[in-house]
Image 1 (cartoon, one colour):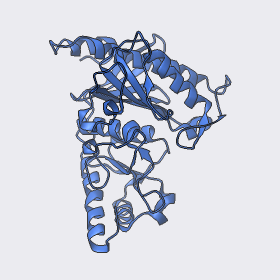
Image 2 (cartoon, one colour):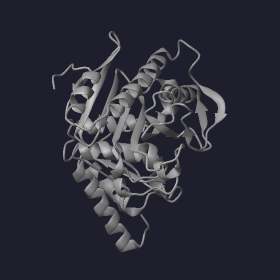
Image 3 (cartoon, rainbow, N blue to C red):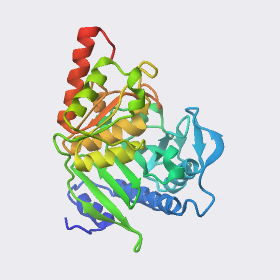
Image 4 (cartoon, rainbow, N blue to C red):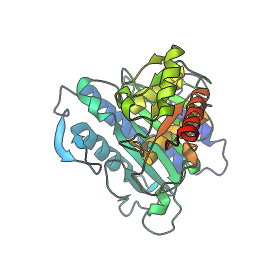
Length: 334
């Protein structure tokens, strides 16, 4: 499709390829972009309005919540609660399921959401973003249940993210390639800017918080030594969506392993790892927890954490091989 095509037209054209399509999914994705536009406007005004800084609250993970965190979460809930396309929403900022109110609780989809990833970077004007995943509901009642949300990533209908940086861009996949749309603020539309994104099979960038090196096992340390020897470039923003977006376009690997302090890792499986894994696989990349393909992991709870190795396929395979080699030779857990 021609570069510059609006997202709405792009979605309608894709919908026509499926005779059984009802338009519900197209409507839902369009409403997600509406929320993204509102958040983008607030991000761009940060510093000019009272939207920066700590709001005095603590979220379900025991982390201080930023004003923009709260605003982004509330924006998604308000915009998406009245579409009729959803039955429930699970957010990184909420402890449990947000039930869509009547009379709108008739949708066939559920949404999982990290409303604002990288919020620790908000006050210093570094790229941040939103990450989302859409699944078909499995329950039949009048309310969403945990069963609807605790699905393996391989069952995902759509994974996507929005980056709020020098420009606002949405990248998504429905299992038929990965496409990127950049917001033109002059006309208020997302326009096709990156069609059929493919990540290079191997990259020259690694993204990791190396301050955690003393707590990493031997396999991870050997991998870092290897990429340094091979003259990889270190690039780590500290905002997952920003690091992932760069590596998706240029090639490389993002890694946040489990360690001796956080053996299960720190990233959330449902809100962060699975949606990005869905996207990277559609772009010919790979995502692993060190032992398994991320999309094969069946979650046991809404806020389950996971180690994550994601990016160019050959780089992910290399770190997996070093982890397995280390585990077998030293008995060191992954």
